[in-house]
Amino acid sequence: MQHLSKHVLAGRPEAALLSLPEKVIQFGTGALLRGLPDFLIDTANRQGEFGGRVVMIKSTDSGDAAAFERQDNLYTLCIRGVQNGQPVAENQICTAISRVLSAANQWDEVLQCASNPLLSLVISNTTEVGIQLLREDIRQAPPASFPGKLLAFLLARYRAFHGDPAKGMVIVPTELVANNGALLESIVTELAHVNRLEFGFLEWLEQSCTFCNSLVDRIVPGQPGAAQKAALLAELGYSDALLTIAEPYALWAIEGDEQVARVLGFQAANPESVVVAQDISPFRERKLRLLNGTHTLSCGLAHLAGFSTVHAAMENAAMSAFIEGLMLTEIAPAIPFRLPAGDAEQFGRQVLDRFRNPAVEHRWLSITVQYSAKMRLRNIPVLLEHYRRHPEPPFHMALGFAAFLCFYRQPGYPVQDEQATYFFEKWDTLPADELVHQVLADEAFWGANLAVLPVFEENVRHFVSGILARGAQAVLMDFFQRQP
Image (tube, rainbow, N blue to C red):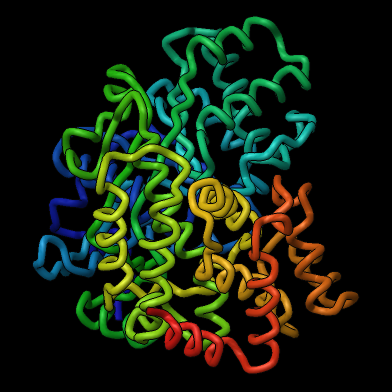
């Protein structure tokens, strides 16, 4: 079977898109970026609305960029699911990526991109722990942190164009962190002061560069399972090492004004998927809490109960009932933000339909990456808001949190969490009841003492004991049978 490359495009209209100029610098090469921002840029290019391509920066040591080179930076996005009651099965060979540079090995080439006058946009997705302040020397090649790399790039651009205000950039992070643009701007600015950069650059950074809060909402699990991939490749007629699956639903909400919309340039081609607005908080809150928060409070339980994918869990009556009850009866009424009446439930039911999409193999283990950071950012504010609004304890949240704790007790499993050692050490040295108390009471870790929440610790201890004694599946079934 022929590999996806320029030769596959021979004679097709899409081939003309390969000569478009580079207009975007992107930190990150992951499936989410390929499945939403890069896809939307490609879609706009096909309609003549943006006319630019993306330079991808592989900013970490993980992953392999060789597939991009073998495939001339092309990849296929297979969109599968149901939209407006109709089945959707579309394949798009995305041509938005011009090249992939390694920050570790090609940092000089990355900085050379800063002198491109057509560049106007920076996009990033470096995971939720990527936007952190590391007081470092940005003259390293490369700086260790993403904000350090971004600052070095912007400094190179400032110097290349002698501080021209017209050569400032719009920076749109997509990391799922509250006010991600404002947070990134504050870190980059502080790091500029740490490095004692010249006043002219500080002024240019503040006045000529625009950092936008943004929200991405599309389930993009990435590589399909072996059987699904074999069927898709047979359908496509070529091999694609970067083959990516995505659901039909797509939303990229960006906080900005008309000037930002003009720089982005791809909204007109994607009117339902790209929103540029002065305030995107409602979009962020409902997605962060209902979709991502439900994922986070469900993934440990689903994994321990033997479900590999979200769809498989939704096919099981007990797990599906847990997810729906968690989302609609506990999370939706406790979102710490005022949404329009009925909006949370309406969006929540859309999300449940998206979870049931049989074509999207969204693996629970991929959702557990940086599990504790996600729990802290997505769910703890909802848990605290629940107790502010409701006297009764949240049983679904307690079970989800208990499974979260038990997830770190798996022997030999390489948990992908920067805080994993914290939990491993407690499991090695404490009995379960004491572990539950110490973790819940760790105000420095969670930002609040969760042990003082009425009955919450008691319920978490009860569920942890059950999971350890009888297994998560048995505890889940008991929970399901006891629900009214």
